[in-house]
Image 1 (cartoon, rainbow, N blue to C red):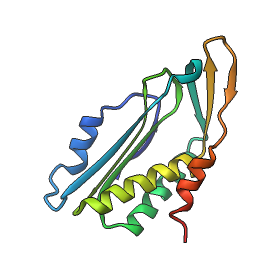
Image 2 (cartoon, rainbow, N blue to C red):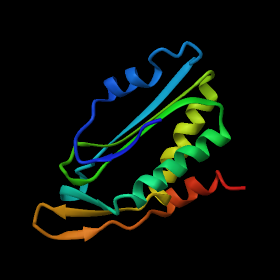
Image 3 (cartoon, rainbow, N blue to C red):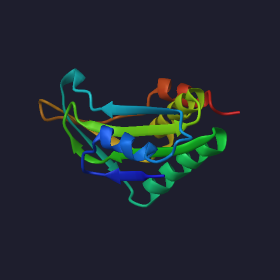
Image 4 (cartoon, rainbow, N blue to C red):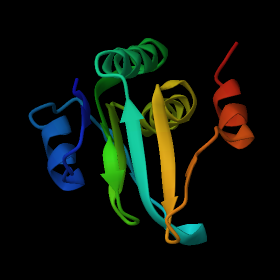
Length: 148
């Protein structure tokens, strides 16, 4: 099950094709593609990470999803480096025999990527200023529903 942290862009269609190829037990594939927003004058977002540590954290999030739901396959791709507004930043796809498991697992993975994955985001504004992006309370609340 692919987990990748990369600077290069990805093709969501090709990733979906590869995910389910040859597995006729899959009845549902759910995917999410996140894009860099340009609202508020954001000219660029830069994502930093610790190689090795980040991949291990993503693999643990993926493994936890597989323990909770009957998944046939998953793909997680997260980009790093400088990204312009509109660029693809994250891709999550889950495949299962049934849609409920695929939907819930995809949402779980995204909630945990937003709150538990070791990425640091810095937004550069059109005026040249830059600020680090803090975690949102709404993201923490979304992830908390999966605990317990």
